[in-house]
Length: 104
Image: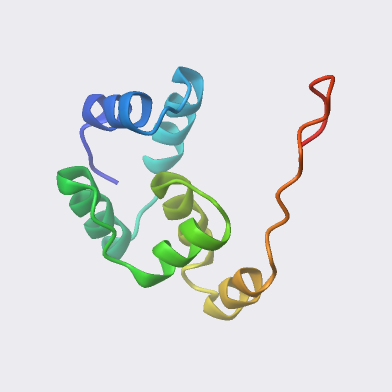
């Protein structure tokens, strides 16, 4: 994908409250995504934080992911829509944090 890394990093860190190291990992992974539709979605989101794709919105809502994580998830399943539908049909379990910081 083609995008302004500094702009994306600033959005992730400042607006999405993503840790610096996570922002770097997300950027590194997004650079490897090569799909015109996802590029268009990223361009739009970078411009005004609007999500163009209903499946992305679904992933964000049902799997509690931020936009970039949802985009990366969708990129894995672009050619396997039936698998994406299967994954989205499974409820997400939100676990409580362990009192000593362990676990999910």
